[in-house]
Image (cartoon, rainbow, N blue to C red; front, side):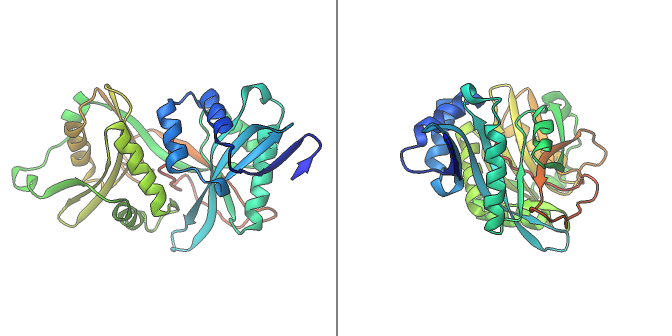
Length: 301
């Protein structure tokens, strides 16, 4: 799409450096993290750019995903990721036009839903104006190491039955899909899980599989510094959750642990909040997600 001094199109070779500059200015991530993304995850065909007077003014990534309904039916979708406008071009509507064009572009290619995770709370209102609605929720809460120490422990006879170990992305993804069956949830390709594993390892953590008898679970961890660990995703029966958290605290010592999990888990806990937003196909309105139980999980934030 081209009009006057601007155009919107997919990225071309040689346009990485201006995107890195925009990313740095907008998100403040380290050069190591930015370089990691562009080395491991960046694809020109999954990147849309807003060009103003020959200069990259805004950018976003389109990650192919699937929305799975409780009956197992899957709908193609795309996660709009790292939406950013160069500060000198902000407040001129460039991001809105970029998002609108991308949504139309995806619709033409049968990606029936667009979704995103606002980087800040105040951005929810901005994306509502772009046609998005809150659709994905999670339970998020903070635990101190002292609180974790007080969680119930296993009986001595059960200690040897509890196993937690680093697992391959494909195995994590297979278990993740099994654990989320019967819910509305976002399904990822194995390559997105592989990217998350590398993100976790780069921080000093990993992705894990857990089991105790027939009970299964998975957890994706990231170290956010010496004092805090992010349990970015934890999926397991409620009976297994305390043991996973206690084991994580032993493996990754810290003062605080930020935990994210589906709303349907840990029902005695508080901390439910909107996490992701969704926009339906143009001219259609055919999916109703009841309440606040749709789960997105990994957002690569």
